[in-house]
Amino acid sequence: MVNFKKIFIFTLIGFSIFCSPNFGFAQTPKEIQKDIQDIKDRLTRLDERIYALEKRFDDLDNKLGKRIDDIANLIYVDLAGMFALFGFVIWDRRSALAPAIR
Image (cartoon, rainbow, N blue to C red; front, top):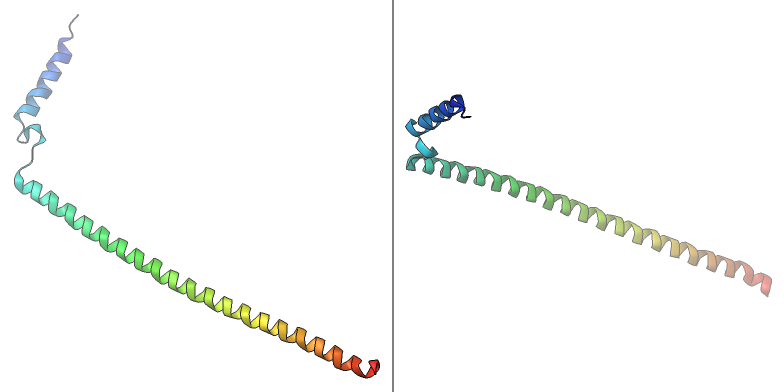
């Protein structure tokens, strides 16, 4: 059984698409150029944002590298202090026990 209501609706939709000013959704060259320019502008803005983000990461990397260098220097100072204290303790024990040994 043929449903004439559906056939009529599809015919109207097809006719309205065929008679529309943008048949087949085609664009004029000016619209295409405008779309291309919009895409170029968006890509330029995106590139600028990525460059700014890379700069922020580089700055953060530099700050962290400086902090790590500072911590390494602090560790070296602490180790030198411990070795100096250990040397002083050995020297003090040896000098304190020298009279008792004689």
